[in-house]
Image (cartoon, rainbow over all chains, first blue to last red; front, side, top):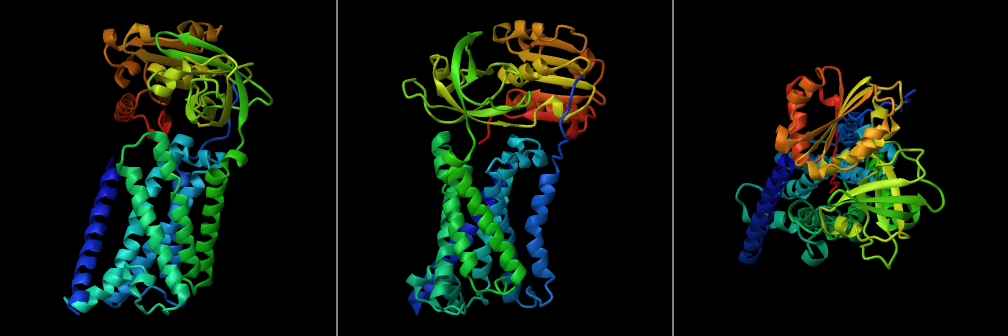
Length: 32
Length: 457
C-alpha cells in the first residue's frame, strides 16, 4: 500500500513536469 | 527420525539485488576517467539521470529474471510468494528510477526562464524522427533509433505499470497485459545497445548493462514466450472429486507418467487441459494437502470464486497439467524442536501436508485450526488420525464465534509460552497480518514467523 502511494506520487510528479515542459516548449515553438 | 532441508537465507536475495543494481552506479561515480560530473546544473542533472537509468535498467532486468520462478531464488527470498513480493517492490522502484531518467535529462536544458530552453527541453522528450531536431547526440540515424526506442520503452512501461499498479482487472487479463512489459524491456535494450553516451564508452559498464539486457530477454523468452514448451510440467489425472464440508472440493489425482517431487507444505500451479470439463484452462495456485510418498496428490480448494466453485463440478478423468512444486513454507526447512502452526479456514491445507509428514521423534507441534463456525472445519478426522503416537503433535480447534478471535496472547497461554518457537501462519491476509504483529509485539523475531500468502498477484 505504501509502495502504491509512492509510485502514484512519482507518476504525478513526472507527469506534471513532462506536461509542463511540453506545454511551455510548445508555446516557445509557436512564438518563434 | 525427522529430516530437514538446507537452511533458507531470506535476506540474501535483497542483498544481491541491491548490490547488483548499485554496482554500476558506484562504478559510474568512481570511474578512473570521471564520468559523473556535478559541477554545473547541466552536468548534475545529466549524472543523476544516468544513475537513475543505470540502476533502473538493472532492476527491470532483475524483475524479468525473478519472474522465471527458478527454485534457486526461493531460498534467497524465502519462498515463491516472497519472490513475487520482491518482484512487486523491485518493479515499483525500477519504474520510479526509469520515470525520472528522461525527466532529469530533459530538465537539464532549462536555463532560467528562457523560452528557448523550454523548447529544447520539450523537444528532448519527442521522437527524433518527428521532431527533426538535432540534439548534441551526434544527430546520426543510430542515435535517432536509440532515442526513439527509449521513448517506446518509456511509454510502454509507463502505461503497462500504471495498469499493473492502479487498474483493477480480472487476473487473467491483468496477467496478459503485464506480459508485454518484456516487449518494452526489449526496446530499452535497443536503447542501451545503440545509445552513444559516456556510459557506452566505459567498457565494463556497457557490457554489464548489456549482459543484464541479454539475461532479461532470455528470462522473458523462457517464462513468457516459450513457457509452454520450456517450463517443466507434470501430467496428473483426477481420480476423485470429493465435497468436503459445505464448500470445499478435495481433488485426488495420480500421475500419468512421472510423479512430481515435492516437500510437505509446498504449493503448485494447476491447469486443467480437458476441454470436455466445465472449467477454464487458466493456471491457478493451490497448496498441496497430501504428503511426499503418498500414491496420490491431493489439493483442497474452497469455493471462493468462479474458478474454485467450478472445481466442485469437475469429473474424474480430467487431466491436470501441474507446475511446481514451489514454496518454502515447511517445517522441514526450520529444524526448531518447538513449533506453532496456525491455520485460518482453508489455510489448513499446507498443514495437512506437513502433519502427514511429521515423524516421531520430531518437533513438538501445536496446530491451531481457527474457523468462524464449526461447520467450516474440514479434515478434522484426518488430523486426528495423522500421528498415531500423538506425543509430539497436538491439534487445537478454535471456533472464533464461541472463543473469540485467535490471538498470539491466547496461543502463548495454551501452548505454555512462545519463546524460541518457530511460528507458521496460513489463513486470510488480515488474520496473518494481525497475528504477525501480535507475535512481534510479544517478542518473537520476524525471522521465526513464516506466512503463506494465497494471492501471488
